[in-house]
Image 1 (cartoon, one colour):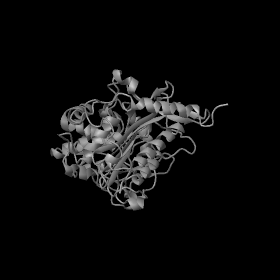
Image 2 (cartoon, one colour; image 1 turned 90 degrees about the horizontal axis):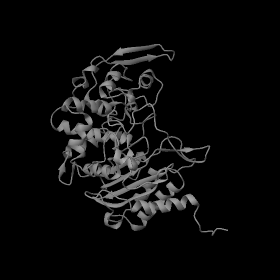
Image 3 (cartoon, rainbow, N blue to C red; image 1 turned 45 degrees about the vertical axis):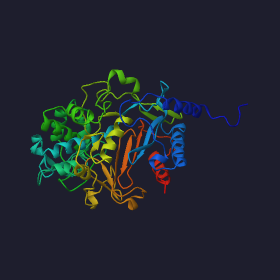
Image 4 (cartoon, rainbow, N blue to C red; image 1 turned 180 degrees about the horizontal axis):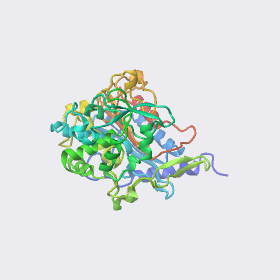
Length: 437
């Protein structure tokens, strides 16, 4: 008979992997290397221990296969840990050096690139998008749809502007949800599976807008369009511009649109809950999109980047520092302020809400969301907290009032275990309860 205190086999494995992950190799040359500790960062030691225990429990319960998490305050890292598996099939441990599909966390990166070019005077918020994408000169707008294939279109009342492109109010669809003719066309034409940005733009130009510019907030293809505009303004591929002007200056050399052959062993797999098997299972590689092994895959500013915890933490800390990190000035403070300030009016059709009604207290800045009223949003965070997440569960937020950032990196998409914890809410609540007086 086993001792009553012995952990179940899966939880024993998770504890072992947690120890392995702490010893895993990480970047040797730039911040962040290791945590300074809870109290040095302004948190209680007991609170950070509770946070680690909660994250490990989420892994042990198979809510996710594995994760890396980091918490920082006042430029000091309170905790930087990893637990669980990067691959269930290979039983490979998640480490602090693992690589992740960050999907929509690519969007704030694209926004920074655009703001760098705005600072150079290469575009203005009131410019029509068609100034840089002439293919959009004759866009049309959905007027009516009877559901039987009879669709009426209107001409544009005015061209959509760059301001509207950056704030998801230009009228573009995305194809991720919705059965209207515009979103259906995105899926049928494989817009997100385009071979390159030229093909993507040509497809989008032939699909009607969801609404007249400035009339509706809708999560859109806008950030992929921005990547194309970066190419038109610079004469460089989007990926090369990011490498030279953002990733190299910030020492984010794990971040790109594909995985190098030498790094494939670090690339975490995506998992989902297999209800029939009663356990996590590994997703098969998609066949409708280019492989992450392919250096020529679509450079999607809306969802294409791969990154590491180290790299994205450096991107976050640059924003926390109002555009600078380790002597590298990426943006002026004014640009960071514009990015992180709500730009929506709060009118019923202009509220931020993905695939549903607007969310109280939540708005949109440039390529990321903003909590402008934490009380209305039911959050302990400071006003002006800005954030975003990716389709496979990666997420971050920055609270400028309390100078706190949180970054969690997982790879989970699809069905979840019944009763699975909301990792983001669990972590957030523990973090604010752990602040020293």
